[in-house]
Length: 258
Image 1: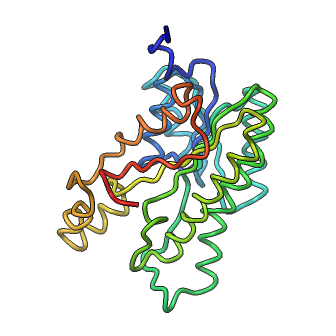
Image 2: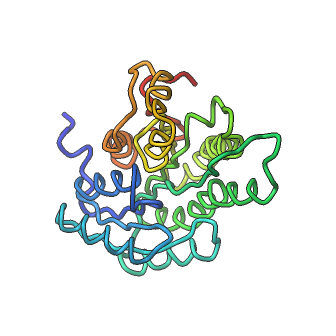
């Protein structure tokens, strides 16, 4: 009989989470550490990465380090993976969470520079992270790559043109990665969040009272999620609980329709 208590156990594993100093990224890195993993906190600012890593280590008792990396910088991604590999000798989980979007993104006026910058971080960044970590995972017996997409990748929407298009590309790329990395025992899946409480959504609600109510109406559960509600899905995909799951995209959206 399957020992259910071990399915989500990440003891001895090493996990990288990009964009993990705030919001759902921080919730995910905390959840992975609580499940037993040694974790790497990564965002653009080293001092913030170090502070969050210290807080996660103190809260969970697991080893946590901070390594700054701009996901739009190809060489910085290579350096991040090299640093983690040298420190721990293995990488078992990589969560591509870091992403950007402009405050306003009307399709009629979006500039080429903004379009390219968004695709550089949201698509090229996860691509190169996967290129770097997959061989390390292969040599360690396998691993799990989790790409954080978005429900905007399915529905598009006013003022999220480039962001939605980049997330649609990430979902498609996830399916290709899963096929190419399957012989290495490296699983690749995506999570597509719906509306979550974040700095961006909280700021929008402050400037336009009722914003939370509006986005909540797009879900069946009629509410906006707390960042902690992403932890269960990412633990599922990172752990042996999803050992026969690859090439999938799971929505975490309160019932929004794809």
